[in-house]
Length: 346
Image (cartoon, rainbow, N blue to C red; front, side):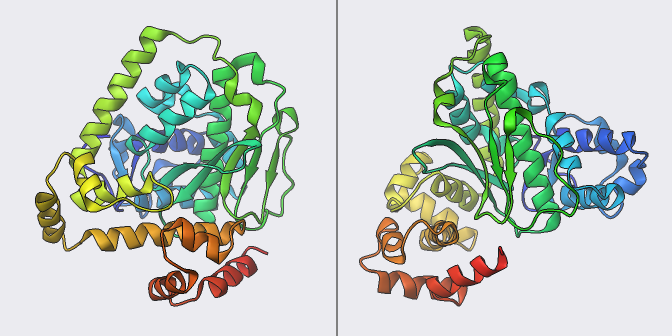
């Protein structure tokens, strides 16, 4: 995405996705003026390729479309129309991967060059190939719609990449919150969409990750990945140092590394990293605590780990110290937070 961001919002998303939304709106008789109402975006943005659009402006356009259309399941169509070529070099890198696991690794690495308000993580279920979608912004009806749109897009890409070998393999998408009142339309190969879940995710049988991609081209794979690496470097250069540190931490699970390791990853001295963080009004401990809070909150909501296990994973000496830290972040004890989130999802 380009350095100059259009519209409002801390996190960017490629204008390519806004263009796809505008095509869907046009087919339903919605004007560009109505789609972009209140977004702080000019209509000319729809004629520009891969410009960074602020997430608040993008979600405002999506909210306008949802209110006009009134059908939650239109998200399925929106996801399916986002074919491989609509994802820039990331789509080509995935298309020419060795297998689905290799394609997933490229998505984890390069997704931030296309969309910043979602983070992708691997699931922990050993029996599934599971991709978890973690929003970096507050949940809302519009975000749920976008999450379904994006997960269906990824599901469609997997089927396109694998070709006929995936035509009869069922997938499962999980969503936070209740289902819409309108019935779910038919899904391919007996696939499912489940509601009232702990997170947004896409799951396949574990065996799918070893299926070779039939039409892979080694030369195109190298070219696409080189362009993805170039885009990732440009993207990193446009970020603040605190954002770059936060992104490094978000790629890690459990106990977080010392400042020295992060400085080495960013090719800086420890003194330089400290100085630049201070200039932005941040420090490494704050960024570590924010990542610990994100991880702890996710594990508490998922419900598979006890408070003691979460404390141990995050590197706390005991559950008491973790509970004190969590309460300082959220104003709630871990058990109270877990209970509240469980009640909200009923």
